[in-house]
Image (cartoon, rainbow, N blue to C red; front, top):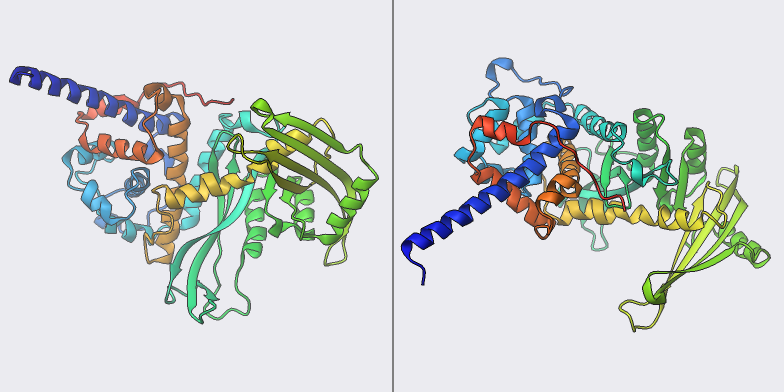
Length: 467
């Protein structure tokens, strides 16, 4: 049985260990951001503050910083800023060390300030951050064929209401006659085999007024978004990974005009003339066939077929020559169960040949799902609370959306980077656990201003696993 002195010593040891771990995770977050993007105030340069300067207590960069912390800590709502951060002296001392103000702003102060911010200026911050990563060659190891960055497009619902929220709402009549009002968004994300899903540009899908002749839709937003993407990244070599929704003449022409590669999902029920021609030509071209076994104990096999130069006439009567690649994967999971097969098929303007089909399929086309699994799914169900209405104001809502994308970028860089992995070689559990421990460190780790700044200042070497 431990004596009081032994208990006190053990308690002090545990507290010391907890403080060291809190310092490590705080350094991983703040140090990673500082390493790639510089000071917090500099990150948000370019966002104009149109508030009355005589009435300003908190700088705009400070408001955006707290917005990002809200997502990094998985607080889930603006009101939690007041409960978890505001009024906590340790937390406010860290905020003061960065921005010079005595208190952390109220959640409503963020909403009020963001109503007056131009959302496109915050979108420009997202683009600037990604360009820095590209310029620093952070994402270079995962380019397709060592050349092309993989870009996925996908839409998702963000907000849903039973009554009209604003003039921009899209409407849908359900089978029971109820009208649903909703706000979807279309994202272009850069994805990698290592698990990055990084927002590049965003297009909000919304009506121009309350009574449009035709509603806005994902396909219309896609054409707007591609123009924005080309303007923002005019010389970036890209391969688009697209759903079958986008398979059509306008997309083929657009990729040719912009000098983009593409891998577009082709289902058996889509573009019937192309699928029929593919099957016929394969019957007389058995040489366009490859089979290999992957994985241990011969549990997974892949069969490839491909055909180039298939003629296709679109709905406008314009002719195109398309290449088709198919991969049928047979596997059993768990071992011992019956084998099952899954077919993947793509339209592409790459020229499939025997030596590149496995790369096109496994390192290219099959990564399209990452925008859902490692992009929207985590943002919806992993604590970022994407579908929560952080503001009823249309302008502020978009600002919050962009801040979520920035926070998710920072979180990915931290979690996958060597500052964090070396500090916690055994991990800390789920992504939610990382957020919880980061919040705990922000709220409880007592440091004076100089100790806090020095924690994440200086030079770091950060590496990512590129295997």
